[in-house]
Length: 182
Image (cartoon, rainbow, N blue to C red; front, side, top):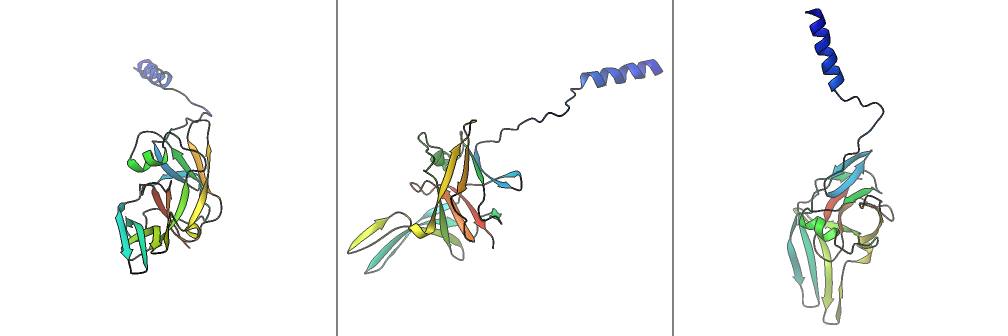
């Protein structure tokens, strides 16, 4: 009986794989991630709720609007590091990971915070002319570097102020949002 128990234990132990000093890399699912103290935290696509416009006699504005006064992910670092893992996924991911994605295509847009939503002014105009695109004071260029595994390391090229942000290409109202806490 004793030898049968020992034999059974030896069979169990020898059938188990033994891994010593080896780490297995877990490939994350396609998406946008932010590094939070060495742990990758997944961002969710910004909840785009439509386009609003304000039309006054002298001036008109067009805004992209996003649901919620704040994004779900709130960061304390003013120069966060992101990882963009391209692949099949949601619309925001498809827009960011287009077939011709280049290192200078991504931007951080600071959103205006309202009581129940956030917004980014996309265009402004008057009877004397107009301007398309974001206010240059509200955007920060993203430094994006393609890694050997095909994914991208993304960081703002300068510190971000406290507030709400959208990572986007600026072409479509798709992207990932996050906030920077004071």
